[in-house]
Image (cartoon, rainbow, N blue to C red; front, side, top):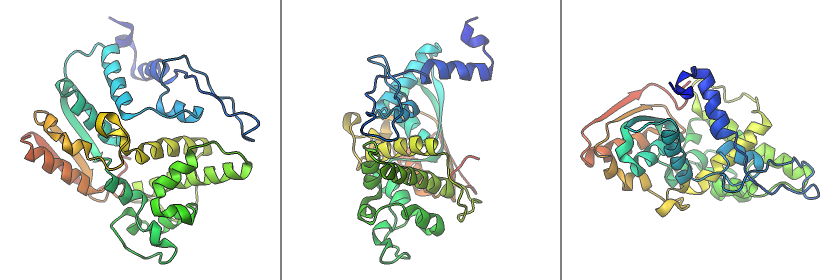
Length: 308
């Protein structure tokens, strides 16, 4: 029996982490002169891509969706999985699961999806744009549907740290803020505030019983890492454009739905999900059935977005 198969679950998880997530990538550090908050960046061997969190901590551009699909294939090879497998994903994980199945349908036994996210511009704007452009003039303006309608207090806390000039395109404004290292302590503080607000907004909208008035703040290091990764993918449409290119206006998953025609798909979505609205699951299920997939099981639960 191979060493991998002898490992218990916890030990096996740590083995995966050491094998795939502890890699180091070569990144040029921010100079001490340019950043008062300078931290030595890890250096990585040439040709090794940083995983998402390591990349964000190191100040490197995180991987693209095509890279993550390749990582799944690498895991299959490493674990000697030669047949079909069950692929599960929730939220962004559902996007990646669908993109993987579209790329490699012959390797997928079933798709099990929770909190479906199609990663189209409208899906992102539903959560991040809302009435931001109109908010200063009329906080109760309702130009389009969005999560802001259900979490008005949390939405206000979020917009408080978004400069008015960036509210016409919130994701673009956040991407601009995260694109370069801070040069002063004041810039770093604004960056931390934006990252913390971004993570806090997602956390507030993810659970049905979350207190919107809670002023608890996420860990700063975690917030900076998570927000940079999130915005990196959202501003680029999950890199689901043609050939894996950046494309905020993509409709990649539904445009390639025919490749999933022969894969059984199980979808579970919360009726009160305000991060990834139910209409995304509805669109996916209808497209699958219209493409001739007769093995779609669809369950709507009385839940929000979080699986907790």
